[in-house]
Length: 393
Image 1 (cartoon, rainbow, N blue to C red):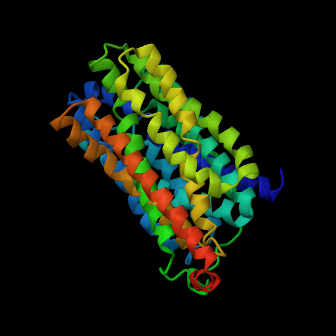
Image 2 (image 1 turned 30 degrees about the vertical axis):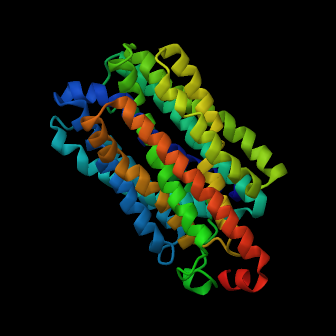
């Protein structure tokens, strides 16, 4: 395996680890509630340690690549993740699980930005978009695999953190790959024209869209299993399959979109993804048949059409050089949505019910669609004015 393949594989596994931490949350929250004798809303809110840790890591990623080599960043963060995950089977009190989850989250936030930057610096233009979508394929594969592992272990009565020990093994692989590889180094942000915060308005609209996407996404993924169990009477295994099927659909669309984007381009595709994500989320809170929910969850996953990486790729094309600060800022927008989702959605459910929180998720998707159309319009207008476009890039 040559160096380019090793660094690409390490980047893919970084996405696998992030998903491996997030995807099982809705599945293991019930067993955790039983283990710690706490309400499920309290347990779900505890995952805020993980998601806010990711947010902190995303903020650190805005600056760290100007100071530390990518290779050293990856080795450090994934060795730390490995050590923290091994401690999760020890706590007998819920108060002790927060700090290691928070540290894992911070490392994931840094590692994910590093992985996206590696791909952005290794591949160019539409090929970059295709490879970034494929990294999301790794994210979805992790969602499928880790959701399945979580369901299997939960049904068999294994400790709730068992699925995270599987993720620890993947962290070890990233450390080993990083030790054996040389990574493309990020150019200092201050040396790149147009990367001093004076980005075009379309970039900021993309950042806001990514925030809305992850907030809406986790409004569904955190509460669909509980919704199916408590309101629809589904067995725990069937409820877990709803989340697993979503990631199956996501993986299928990322394989498809990684090919399709090379033919129709990012600019056209970005106009479609928001609409399809919004429309196909509606049946998830309308349907009352569990078997139908499992099917439509897979369809919804497919109709997301790799939204996160399509928007990220669209935004990176607005500057001549996709710097570490630009990539990290885009991922920060998505990370903020993920970080606040356990607390925000828990408050919504406590005040209303699980159906309403999913309607809230659809509302987030509708608003992001408006933002994406506005971003595309603003970028097109900027490109029609060569002097303005040159100034912004």
